[in-house]
Image (cartoon, rainbow, N blue to C red; front, side, top):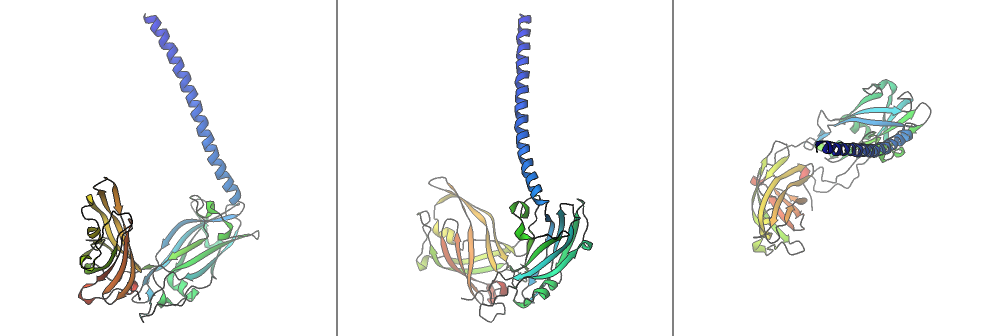
Length: 364
């Protein structure tokens, strides 16, 4: 009996070994084919690119900060790029790199507080701001030419000729790079496709935008009074907003400091709208990282109200969007909406007659 069992066991072991061998070969074939496909893609990209040249982004450091009260950039404002050049000869074909710059206006505002929205276009035309030669490069960690390029705000303002007093947060300076090779060929942003300009390996867009951030000049942490002037329920019937003038929400909302300048926790992201429109609708209501962020010229509502509907047990998350429509002294009129489609308008009033910061002002 033992002998028969041993024979059967031996046969089973051989069968298992054969199965394992076949499975291993099959998996190896699949992996080999998969890797070969990826290698071919990479090889094809390299074949296409190394016949020309790329300017790989190794690091960016944007420190462009504008102070609206002084009408100037902060003293340490600059934009720093660490770039690596690669060509078919690993950098030996590099002759020089031309850098072009222009100012781009992305905002319209009453910059000089004269009560009129500025209609002049501050955007400038592109010009050659600097030329890098091989002397501006060192050998980087990948044995390719590498250079750290720094632009100060003063240099960019002077070169573009933009009126510094009219700059606003969210405007930017646009930089474009052009590689010139010793064989007479040149490459810039129009000569690359998505694999090169935005790919994880090459990351060589040849063009950069040094977005201007705002110097937070005061704290908005405070307790505000608010009056909702209109509400509109979302289509579909879930919300039942009470829209009669006597039923519209009003009260106070408190914004409190967080560890991040310009970011505030809020006691009510909806200005009473949520409680007005959703009476006994949800079995669960939780607030997840509800924040107000002073983002240059706008106020952004962040976080979600997480709910579970009574009738369906459906989970519904509410997010909110604010649009500043008008400011007048201490009053700010905001259109707000949530992700379910409810809409409203509120007048938010700063205490003690304090006026809103210049960056947040709007004229009707």
